[in-house]
Length: 387
Image (cartoon, rainbow, N blue to C red; front, side, top):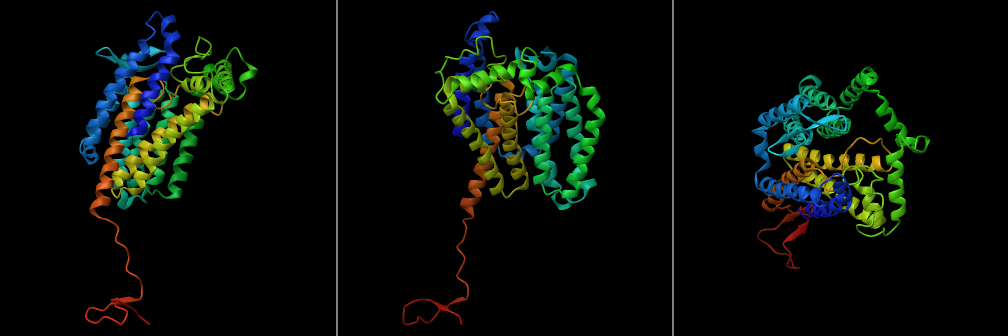
């Protein structure tokens, strides 16, 4: 409970630090992004508390409705989405801008956990046990790629792959799925190759070859990370956020953390994120219910995969895809979904704890020993070792 709240509060502080100049340059008040993030944090905490109380088993009853609403929102984005940075990913509802793909990540985790938990009896059968849930996943990926949002599509694909592997699917079935995926990727690759995407790949792995084009953002990120050193320049003292580094309060917020708080700040943030992931995996392992186990696994993998993609992008390991850092980056939909997910994970943890308390582990009796009910031996012991 404590770790995601700490990260979210720290994220609010860093969003304010990283966005002041951006807000003023855009003609807004310097606290504009700060108060927006606080509003979403308040909504997220309400969702966190509610989902901590609601038994996680209840989601299975309404899983079809949850998935239907998620897919409907993705379809609406294609026709009525708000376009920014050459992509239509958001819907404006009652003055709030929401990103349906963020909610789809959680709804798909719920669906996959429910589907594969029900198919455990015949999970080794490819046609009945493995393939049907992947049809919905393919539809969702197609709608998200259409926006386009390759970063979120990659996260959803990797989450799905994680849940499938851990649900007990045979290795040969996994190999077949990956082979089909590679064939489709090769077939669709020409339609995805654009000058912008080529520039992102070149910028990730050869940033200094085109420093004024694809490599500009990564070079500025390197400067921020390098200047920060071990202890940083001090909170609020970043230079790169003064218009040099694009997305200082969103995609590249970790670069600003590195510049202002140094390696110490980076290690603390990564340590807290790792705590959530490892705790989620521990809860999944302890949960006796297959739905709860797969659900906890999916939530933990969502946080871990998204963190890895974001950190990989700012350090040049992966191309820049527009993926935010969980709990830290500015983004209302992302923060809301993450806190709701933590509420669900907390409820699973409580159910695991109750099971452990109601069914404590019994210490095994020593082997080759029988209890003597009527006669005590000379030592006064009631246990006699058998020969």
